[in-house]
Structure formats: structure tokens, C-alpha cells
Amino acid sequence: MQVVVVGAGFSGIGAALRLRREGWRDILVLEKASQLGGTWRENTYPGCACDVPSSLYSYSFTPNPRWSRIFAGQREIHDYLRTTAKRYGVDEVLRCGVRVVEARWDQNSGRWLVRTTDGEYRARVLVLATGPWHEPRRLVVPGLGEFPGPVFHTAEWDHSVDLAGRRVAVVGSGASAVQVVPAIQARTAALHVFQRTAQWLLPKPDLSVPPALNWCADRLPGIRHTVRAGQYGLQEGIGYVLRHPRLVGPLEAVARAHLRRTVRDPVLRGALTPDHRLGCKRLLTSSTFYQALVQPHVHLHPTAVSSVRGRHLIGADGTTVEADVVITATGFRVGEPALARSVRGTTGRTLHETWTEDGPQAYLGTSVTGFPNLFLLLGPNLLSGSTSAISVLEAQLAYLAAALRHLRREGHVSMDVRPAVQAAYNAAVQEALRTTVYNAGGCSSYYFHSSGRNTFCWPWSTGRLIRSLNRFDAAAYTCHAPSTPAPVPAPRAVAEDIFPADDIFPADDIFPADDEGITA
Image (cartoon, helix red, strand yellow):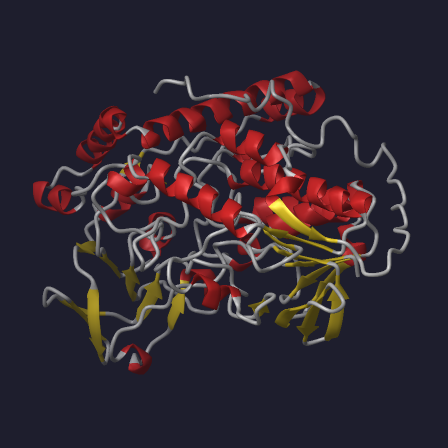
């Protein structure tokens, strides 16, 4: 194959769409599950929904004019992905039920040797599209394995377990917990929520979208673009605030008012009040979480779980709770791609081994020195507390397409980002992050590697990210020509009526090129 893409969520499907538009036909998308969908296939817990507006959480070249809510639910998003993949023929290059065991760069042939449960593939280019929200973070405490009732992670929801009339313990108070707790509380006899750290929570204007508005958006693209641009501007305004901690105060005031208006009990309100700056951890939104916590049968325990004895969960502060079901809402291991321990570069070391000391690093979050022709999607230091992952993804796909065009045009076997270029870029990122609320907010979060480096957040505006990824610089790479030059066949063209050439990626009037001047 020319290109092998690993993962069939938003990133993998988007990569297949973009590469097919570029004319590449010898591509393959490998997905270990039985169907595509990524995190939106796996997370089926009650209440699961997007936390950025729906119009931003879809490919810009094929928007969905029929979202039922401002923040779409899991089923709608999964259906959108499946429909889009089928519409553009991704099924033709998708192989489900195939797990990648190892990928190794072969210097002699200039190819990636990808060993899978379905045999071995040879690929000129390898694209890792496994995403940061893939591997569940397990709760590891003494005695949990001996708990006599059902225990499951929110990303592995056991729909055979009936919660009606049962005592349920939810461990965690982050993004998945604020969605699942309101969705299940009415069914339970008692609901215990273990909160290790209080979170800032902004109200979520999750309203139904009137059918008339969807009808207009479907027939009048100008309305759709205006709504998308407005929601983009709002998200970027929040992002500007998070990059300048002195401006965070007004948002914190909104969050405090939301808490004070909903939670009247001063003791409970005190337990829910954070001791760090807003944005230091992932920004959460919900208009129903606090309402669920004030119900008489719901109990908040502001402590971590330290052990389990029989049916009893023991908190770090000595709290003891008896439960019939344990649900772990402990998030994901977002530090590095799921295949980091299985992908070996020019030295034979894996990505994980390469990153062990300082954590994941890549040039523009996309290329890693020592791993030629490897491209990461939604890689290190590309996301933030406000950016839509799809906006970032589409910019990366444009960069990937430009890199492959360069390989094809110049007839190179491989391209490997120069170590000095990667080091200088990451030094600039870390310096810029130093004054943001992500780093200076006074908390610990999954943004940080054990080395103390923030390996998750992008420190500038999304506009700057798009501009950076729109400028492919071949000089940043060491390129290798074949020992025996051979003609490179031109890819077959793709019909323009399937992939319009002028609007597959956002125009500047939808995504402004420079938003550093936006004020809160």
C-alpha cells in the first residue's frame, strides 16, 4: 500500500477522505473494532454528548444540517460519521476487525512493515489516527477486583446492568461524570459520587435546534456558515482568555454564580468550589450536574477512593460507602498514542521509548524525528480547553496532503523531520505555555507528563495553528532519494462533483486567519 491509516474515528475517516481527494488509491484504513466510529463508537454511556457546538464538531466540507441539539449526543455523532464514510466511499478502503500488532520502519526498502492480526502490510506512509481519547484510565485500588457486583468504565458501559433501585458509586467528577450522573440519578436508589478534585463548571446552553432553522441551514449555506463562524468566534474568545490568566476572572464569576444559584447547601457548595484557576484542567460545561447532586438520594464524597472491601468503598478520608455497582468515570490515558509501544523507528526504539524522558514531542504535533514517513493526527501539543478537535484535524490533514504531494513530486523515498527543527519548535511551545492558565493555573492535570512538561496543549490561537499547518516547509525535513530512481505513477483524479476542490477546508471567512485580537 502507499498509505496505511490506523484507526477509523474522526481522524482516520478524515484522512481517508482527504487522501482520496488527492488521488491516492492504494490506501488502507485499519480498525481493530467491528465498525468505525472511534470514541463515538465506544462511549455509549447514558448522557454521552459533545462538549463543543455540533456545527463545529463535523467536517467543514460535509456539514450536518440536521443536528437535533446545539450539543449533539453520541448516537447522532456516530451516525454522522457512518453516513459520511459511506457517502464518500471510505468503506472501499476500510478493514475492520484488524488489530495492528507492530509497525517497524525498514531502512533498506524505505517502507513501514505493519504486522497485524490479518497478516503483514508494507506501506510507504503510516498515519496514526488512534486519537487521545481511546485508552481508558483504569481505577487501581486494593480490593476492587474482589468487588462482588458489576464494575465497569464509562467507555465500556455494560448495558446489561440494570441500575434501577440499586446503590451506585461513580468514581470521578470529570467530563464523563458530569454527563452520566444526571442521566442515571433518577433510576438509582442511592448514588454516591467520589470527587478527588473539585472542577470548574460553566452552564451549558444545550437547547433543541428548531426544525425550521435546520431547514434554512440546509438550503441557505450562508446561514450555516454564519452560525459556524459565530460559534467558532465564541470558542476562540474563551481560548484567548485561557491563554491570558489575568482575564479568567469573569468566567470564574459566571461559574461561581452557576454553582451558587443551583447548590444552596453551603457545605456541599464548599466541597464543589475549586481551589485552582478555571482552565487549569479541562473546561467542563453542564446545566444538570449540580441539579443532580442536590437530590436527596445523591451524595457527594469529596475524596479519592483508597480501597475496596467487599461491597464497601473506602475513601482516602475514611468515608465508607456500600454499593451494588461501581462505575469508574476516570477518563483516558491521553499522554501518547495507543500504539506508541508498538511503533519502531530508524533506531529500533519505539515511540514510547523515545518519549520516556520528556514525554511526547513532535514537530507541529505531526512528525517525529527518527520515524520517517510517519504522521500523527491530533498529536502532542495541538489541543486546548476550547478548540474543536475537528478544526485542528482538518488543518493537519491539509499538512499531510502537502507532505505527500512533496514526496510524490520529488520522487523521495522518505522524509524525516530534522532533530534541531523539532527541538526548536517544542522549546518555543513550552516557553509560550509557561504563562497560560494551563501551566500557571495551580493544579495538576492530564495535560502534563510525569516529567513536568505540558504535552497536550497548544499555546496560541487556532488561527495561528491553521496558518502553521498550511505552510509545509520541506527544509524542515531530511529527504532521501531512491538508490535507483524509478518513475512515480501519477494518482488517478477524483471527480470534482464528489470532492469539491474549493471548499473541502474552511475558508478564511469561516475560520479567521488571525484572532489574537479577540477580547473576552
